[in-house]
Length: 448
Image (cartoon, rainbow, N blue to C red; front, side, top):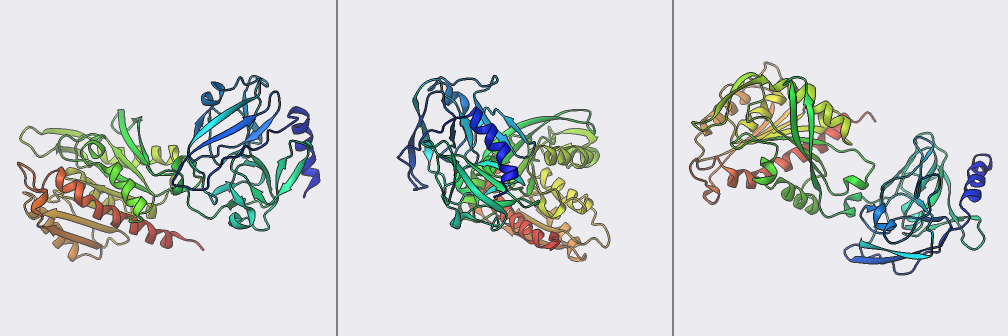
């Protein structure tokens, strides 16, 4: 133990926070069960706790049960290793430790599935205030030899002691002596939650000179994980074509949840922007396929490449390289998805599309280093444009797959296979294709 580093922290901590509440019984390690977990808090004492269930907990949930004393205008503290400062969060996360000071003895109850014993936790150099569950020997991850000990404050002696087993309701101090940090735990945090979530964001596009909307699907465990994710850009092209089309009409969030749970695809972020139904090329195009479709003009290609991708990379935990970016879409969205990849191979590796209208696309001579997937129904009025484009690809050096499906069960009026019944079903194939390319891209981008 590096006592010179340890003592200043402990001295400050013991003066300000004199005691710790004992852990309450009742924890269940059955990850599939919903647990009601009581946790006792001691009046006017520092209670170093963690969330013992697999979900975030609002601080208001605790404040409503316990009268919490303020310390320097805050109720709950967490040590931020990155900034080296104390913070007072509004939401408690299951991989962190917290200090809580109630004004009276009370018991709070946590409801939810039990926290997994080997949840991955990213540790930074220096002091980390974390939670955990299980024997350190079982969850050491790649931290072997990189941290000194896990410390817990004993409620009876008010002294720190080194522990070898982490309890799910306690917070712990861990000092990492490696400048690169390390990862504690050996199980993917997908076990944290059975479903992902979709959120709507707006941002200003300089290329289109207006505010645009985008829906972003975040996979199970995203909110609890420190890892970064590959990104699929999914474009809607059939009318109506908005950022809501793939969730409201394509059920993409439910499909992704199910396939991730089954292990059919890896975890990924799915970005669904409003594209006005265009083919995502600079200039003008018909935004749709009906007789009432209007002509849209604008720098839609720049909107994706210069505005949307940088926005997503800055706001989300992405892997920001071409091997971990893919495109997909339906109808005009499929056209745009393929167009993006063949014209921006420096940004995208994987491209997919269903029922695209590819008659205007040109295949750059000598293009390599991308991978494409396309499919179309036998009874799609635009099938021949896909067949013709596949013939162009056959003469190139581009790796591609082109399928036609005679599936009478997904016909829709009035355009046969050109409809959401078809796209809901066959998007599973493009998701598998994209996921496989992300895995292959991880090998290709590895600098090891």
